[in-house]
Length: 348
Image 1 (cartoon, rainbow, N blue to C red):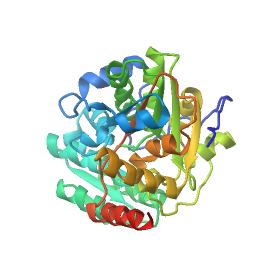
Image 2: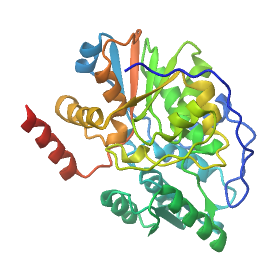
Image 3: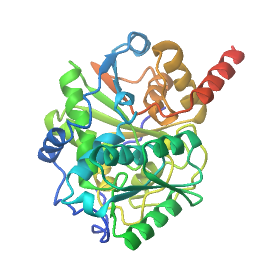
C-alpha cells in the first residue's frame, strides 16, 4: 500500500479556553527534553527490541519499541504524566479526562501515584477490559455517550461543575511533549535508524515523536498508520481542516474517534512533521496481532499492531537502513486475542 504524502500547511483554530491545563506557547525539542526529566519517576525507558523475523521479512533491521511495558501498559502514560506534573496544584482541583481507554488508564495511574482525585469518562463503545482496568486504579469511572465525542462533552460538563482540570488525550503541548520522549529514546536505542512507523489517531503520539526525532535527525522519515475507516487525522490532513468521521468498531479501538473542532496543535503538527500517512485494513490489523503473538510472543492490542501491519502489507517498500515500529500497548483481553489466534489458525 503506497503512503499518501502531504505537503501543504494547515491553519487551525486558536487554543480553546476552559478547564484545561495552561497552554505553553510552543512545543519544541526543549519541551520534550524537559518532559523526559519530569516524567522519569513515573515512566520507564521501554526497550527497543530487534525483530529477527521482521528484519528478514522486509530486508532491513526492524526494532519494536515496546511501550506495552509501561506501568499502565501503554505509551499514554508519558503524556498524562507530563501534563499532570506540569500543573500548579492538581491535588486541590483533581483531574478529569475523556478517553478510549489507554489515556484514561494513564491518568488514573498517575493520579493514584500522586494521591490526586481523578474522574475518567469513557464512551459505551469502550471495551469492558479497558473500563475495568481503569476502575482497578481507583479512579471514578463514568461510562456515558455513544462515542468519544459524546463522552468528551460529558467530561467537559463535569469539569466545569466540579472545577476539575481536564487532561486532554492528545491535543495539548504537555501531552505531545510527553509522547515525544519516545522519539528521543529511539534515536539513542536504534543505530542506523532511518524510518519510524507510528500509530496515528488524534496525533499526540505521532506529532510528538516526529517533531522530537526529526529535530535531532532531520533525515529521518516518520510514517503514521491508521485503520482504513474513520481515520480522523488522515481524513483531516487530506481535507486541510478538521472533518467529522463515523466512529465504527475496529480491532484498532484505541485509534477510533474524531478530532474536536477546536483542535489546536496536533493537526498542524502532523501536517508539518509527518512524511506520510498510510491506512491498513481490519484483516491486516488482525493478521498483525496474530503475527506478533505467534512470531514475536507479544500481546498487542489492535492499535498497537498497525505498524507491524503496514510492514507486512508492503514488504517491498524502500525502508532504508533501519525501521522502528512503536508498539503502543497491550490492553486487550487475553481471551479475545486467543479467539483471534484460533480463528486464524483454523483458516490455515
